[in-house]
Structures are given as structure tokens and as C-alpha cells.
Amino acid sequence: MTTSLVTGGAGFLGSHLCDRLLSEGHRVLAVDNLITGKAKNVAHLEGNDSFRLIHHDVTTHLEIDEPVDNVLHFASPASPIDYLELPIQTLKVGSLGTHNTLGLAKAKGARYLLASTSEVYGDPLVHPQPETYWGNVNPVGPRGVYDEAKRFSEAMVTAYHSAHGLDTRIVRIFNTYGPRMRPKDGRVVPAFIRQALLGEPLTVFGDGSQTRSFCYVDDLVEGIWRLLGSDVTTPVNIGNPNEMTILEFAHRIVEVTGADVEIRFLPLPVDDPKTRQPNISKARELLDWEPKVNFEEGLRRTIEFFRAMEG
Ligand code: NAD
Ligand code: UDP
Image (cartoon, rainbow, N blue to C red; front, side):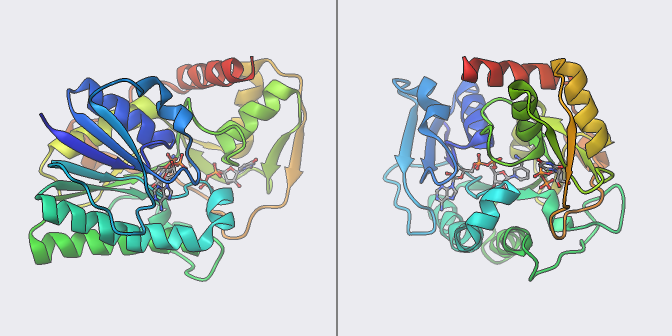
């Protein structure tokens, strides 16, 4: 049986990944210190003999007493609010955590997959962003702790690949949404859904002209699954190119929820990227992957989850 270890396995993306790996017949070890994740996200897996949740901070040495075939490193605060509140932990999990998990993969002879991010492109000057773009990141701005940790992680993974021959994959994940996001994690999709459901004004930062492109979680997990099974060792963007302004997104939330709410404009956070859209030609060509879930359908499933949470 294939054993896959998922760091951050009790988080939003990590828990969906655990579900997928289990459904593919893997044994899954989720390693998480629950700093931004929740045991509730994997509570439905309790009693499944193929699944184990290990409470551990991956910035410290990790000892696993069984064979491991894949290490998927997803542990990291991921929402801007979380990484602004946890700057040192974010830098540590992206540096020490990446080093420890690479060491584990090397010791076990496992394949390694890093969850990187579109934030490696910073506030991009090339649009849409192909993997060949090197980015425009402010190392000492508030987002630097996250962006530079991920850039360091990519460099470290690449060094383990070239120096130790480790079998590695790097996925650059663009804004992904879906069930199990924390309503108050500060990211725009849960923020607007929560506000709409509570009848509160939608908080648009700046004038709302900045753009993002939102990918539904099932599509992302499919892309990661294909990347893991491929032989592509260079970074691959996975995301949905469906780009919109944040103001347009606010209006769509109003339409889909039918909420009677106003829009409140608040100051734009420092270094907030003005545009973001993945160029997914590489994933299309090498993984035969593209997103399938349309935005209204993805939103409907996410809103359903948030409604059920409230009830
Ligand atoms: P999340 O906060 O829901 O999940 C992160 C998980 O990592 C949490 O369960 C948290 O408790 C755990 N964690 C953090 N530090 C840890 C440590 N030191 N030791 C053990 N566990 C630790 O966030 P998410 O959205 O699921 O993001 C998961 C990964 O995907 C992150 O690496 C993030 O950078 C990356 N990513 C996500 C998105 C997105 O849109 N969701 C976009 C780009 C990249
Ligand atoms: N945003 C917003 N209102 C909110 C939360 C976020 O207008 O309540 C904006 C934010 O300024 C950014 C975009 O929505 O331009 C996406 O923010 P998010 O935190 O989801 O992720 P990011 O892509 O910035 O990492």
C-alpha cells in the first residue's frame, strides 16, 4: 500500500487532499499542529484504519516509524490575516519545516511535493503569470514573510532535487476556495460569503479594481493528484484563469446569495497585488489538466457548507 504523509493535513486544502489520497487507496498520515487548521476538518476520517492524524509542529524534527512513499508539504498559515499574525511561524514553517520534511523524504526515499503559491510572483508585472516569470516581491513588506518563505522553499526543494536526486514536485497554487475554509480566515471568498449570510456590508478593500482568479478546491486537488503522478519536477501553476475584479466578485456574491447588503470600501492593505491570473498552459500540456467546476457551481457548494455550519 502507498503511504502519503500530508503536512497541514487538518487545514482547508490538506484535508481535501487527505480525502482524495484515501479514495485513491493510499494510507494517509496527516501531520498538523492545528495552528490555523482544525481537527474537525478530518473528524469524518476518525475510525478509518488507513488514516492517522499526528499532532506535531513540522518546524521541529519529525520521526515517522513506518515507510513513507510521498511527502506533501502543505503546512503553512495561508491567509494574509493569518500570516500577518504569525510572521515568525510562517517563516519557520517555510524554511525549517521545508528542510525537515525534505530530510524525512530523503530518509524514506519518498517523492516530495511542495505546496507553493502564486505569491512567489508578488505584485506581478507580467500578466497572466507563466511559471517562467520570476516575480516582483517586496522582502520587507508585510507579505514578505509568506512570499519569501515560499520562494526559499522552492529553492530548497530544487537543491534537494539537484544535490540529492530527490524526486520532487512544486505546485504554485492560485487562490482556491471551497468548503472547510474558516469563515473568519480573512480571505475574500469566506469573508464575503459570511458577510452576505449575516446581512452585513461586504468589505471591499481599496476601490475593488484589483483582480483575482478563483479555483474550486476539487479542481485544484485533481491538478495536484496529476502532478504527483507525473514526472514534472519544475514548478507548475494550478489555478483557474477566470479573472475578475474584487468589486465584480462582491456583486456576484450578492447575486448568488440574494443578500440585501451594501458594499463598504476600506483601505487597501500594503502590497496587495493589483492583478493575478494563472497562465495554465503548462498544466494543460503536461498534465492534461484544466479546471472543470464553474464559478457559480463552486460558490453554491461553498455557500451550502457555510449555511450548514451556521445551522
Ligand atoms: P490552512 O491554514 O487551512 O492550512 C494550513 C495547515 O497547516 C493548518 O492546518 C495548520 O494548522 C498547519 N500548520 C501550519 N504551520 C504548521 C506547523 N509548523 N506544523 C504543522 N502544521 C502546521 O491553509 P490552506 O489554504 O489549506 O493552505 C494549505 C497550503 O496551501 C499552504 O502551504 C498554503 O501556502 C498553500 N496555498 C494555499 C492557497 C489557497 O488559496 N488556499 C493558495 C496558495 C497556496
Ligand atoms: N479583500 C477584500 N475584502 C476582504 C478580504 C479581501 O476586498 O474582506 C481583497 C484583498 O484586498 C485582495 C483580494 O480580496 O485584493 C483577495 O484577498 P485574499 O485575502 O483572499 O487573498 P490574496 O489573494 O490577497 O492572498
